[in-house]
Structure formats: C-alpha cells, structure tokens
Image (cartoon, rainbow, N blue to C red):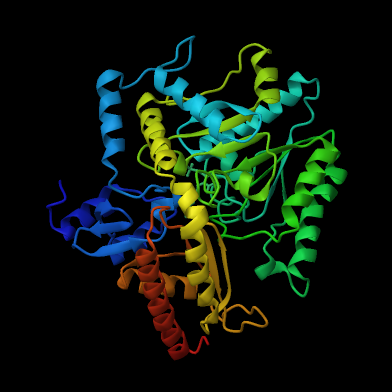
Length: 459
Ligand SMILES: Cc1ncc(COP(=O)(O)O)c(CNc2cccc(C(=O)O)c2)c1O
C-alpha cells in the first residue's frame, strides 16, 4: 500500500479499516475520502495531483508551514540518539530539559514549569488534576469545580470533552464528569440580540461571577477558556470580556487556565493569546503550534505557585508514557528555533496579520456575509441571508457552510466551516501573494455558494 496505488483502491482500504474522527464514516465511504499525499509551504497535494491552499494549517497546527526539512532532520537525529525514554522514575533526557527551559523563557511571567502530554486533550485532563490537587494540598479539597463555556472546545478525552461545551459530544458516551460547570459563551453574533457587543461582553463575563456566587467561591477551583474560541467558530470575544473575566478571577481567588492549544505560538500575532489579551493565566494548555503538528506533543505550562506547591507535597500520581517524548521534544525545539530565528511571529504581527485582516474584513461586503472577524492569523466570517438581523438560513445549521466548504475544495482552497461560519487559520509563513490567492478563491467560492443557495430558495 503506497502513494502510487490507484486512489479508488486506497479509498476502499480506508473505508474498510479506518475509523475517522468526528466523521460520518458511511457517508465518507460513499463520497470517497480525499487522500493527501504531500505538502509544501501552505500547499497540500492529493493522490489525484490536485493542489489546495491550506488556509487551515492542517488542524490549526502547521504554524511554520509544510516541508521544513530541519524538523525531519531533528527527529531523525533524536531517533538515532535516543528514540524513547520516559521521564517517570527519577529519569529525564536532554530534549525534555531543553524544551522546558525554552518554554519557560517564552511563556509570560511566572509560567516556568511544564507538564507534558501527547495532545491538547490530555493536557486539559492534566489541568483538571493539577488544579484539584493544588487546592486539596492547600486544605480546600472541596474547591474542585471547574467552570468553562458552552461551545468551548477543550479536547475529546473524558476530561477535555467534559470541559468543552459542545452538546453534540456530550451525548456520545462523553458524560460531563462531576465538577464541571458551563456558562454561556461570548458569541455576540449568534447570541447578542440587540445588545451592543461591549454590553454583551460584560454580561457574559459577569455570568462567571454569578456562577461563582451560586456555587460558592470556596467550591470553584478554576475557570478555563480559550482566549479566542477556535473550533467553536473563531468567536472573538467583545473587548470588554477578558478584562472583566480577569477581574473576577482575581477578586474571587479562582485559578485561570488559558487554553492556548490554538492561540499559542504566534496564531494571534503574539507568542500566546494571553499576551494578545493581557490576561494572566496560572496555567496555559499547549499543543498544535508547539511542534507545528510535525510530531504529536501537548502540555501544560504551570505557574511557580502551583508547581512549587505540588512539588512539595510528595508524588503527583499522574502522567503518560509519552509525556515529554524525546523525538517530539526535539521536533518542538526545532520548530520554536525556526519561529524565533526567522522572526515569524514578529513578521506576522507587523506585516502579514495586518495585510490578511484588511483583505479578510473586506469580504464583509459580500452579500452572503454578516461579519468578518480576525485575530492575528485566525479569522471567521458569518454567513447570513440578512445582515442587519443576523438571521439564520431556512435550512439546518451548517447546510450553507458545507456547501461553501465543498466549493472551496473545488476551487483549490481548504477553508473550514463551523455551522454557517467559515473559518481560516493559515500557516504563519503565508505570503501576501498567497493571501491574495486565498481571498480570490474564497470570494469565488462564496459567489458560487450564493448562486447555489439562491437557486435553492435559501436566500
Ligand atoms: C482549544 C483546544 N484545546 C484542546 C484541544 C484538544 O487537542 P487535541 O486534539 O490535540 O487533543 C483542541 C483541539 N482542537 C481541534 C482538534 C480537532 C479538530 C478541531 C476542529 O476545529 O475541527 C479542533 C483545541 O482547539
């Protein structure tokens, strides 16, 4: 079985043996899975030789773009030197030491300690244990509730899936584990009604204070949130939201966990989303852009107070076989070296993000689009049949989004849909010319979608 096999044969084998995440597998078997065989820069190639501008960086993760041989070389070197050893039982290895020191240098303020995982979900499971263990050590074991938001995404393990707020996930065997409480999300477009975004942002943030009051501050361990909700549809919170959240956490002694799995490592034009919003988390969840997706790695960057408290309380009985995997650490280190030495994040902040924003926001003139939002290199547009009222389409949510996504693929563009929002998160190394191509293909796809839904009477 290889890239050279006929696509149909590969598709049949995939349908027979491969269960895809978040997928209607029977439907996919009918339509035929797309086989990606290669990638370079911001461009993907499939088994039929079609090229796609990957405006999603894979799954929000390939920040330095595809084809960086340096990371393959770093992996090969490490594999030959020490392919695996664990960091349990009084042992460590240089890649884990070096990456931890580097992350402590890059992370803000007192976030100086790293607990590793193989994914963002596992890192959020770690976070549940960290904050509950921390308060128990401080003599407050009942301070164990974690508050998060509806339509948040924090992963797909039982812990991460419970922290998340996507109802569709909490029916399929992922119960919300005890001690997780959800408040509403700061999604003005869908839920703001007649309020101004600023008033809405305050109202949604104040829901945290109300929840703390109702639950009792002595019961609430932490609040977890993505600086900008990613998988929820790139929901940029109103400007009033984060300052109010920070005030509430400070005032009530609630730990703040910033889930930086998407926002981290340059996505917002800053190293972290916490830097962009000026928030002070006690823990940051990291994954994705940490290694640009070239190797699976995640983790929690933890502040001195929590790390030292736990360190001085005997064994912390938690961890994973691949916590701090040497090859993944070596790849992550090389990824961070490139981000730093090529000043990729500075270039995003100073040049590329402003250029993308100007082009992306001009899409709002399109008849199908109600709002175009962009934070650094993550953007979304809300499709609507009526801008002023922010109306939904007279079809199941996502129908128009799927139609638009399909047109994008046909036009050589990977642009995600979440419901009837279209989202992008292109590699940070995208050039202005490639941004022009992205916008051209997006516009063409939107025009074709517009024609399709008018024909269907949806508009
Ligand atoms: C904020 C956040 N936190 C945790 C996770 C979980 O990470 P892992 O997947 O590595 O366990 C994520 C992951 N985000 C994610 C993962 C898969 C698909 C999509 C999508 O937008 O369709 C988004 C995420 O976006």
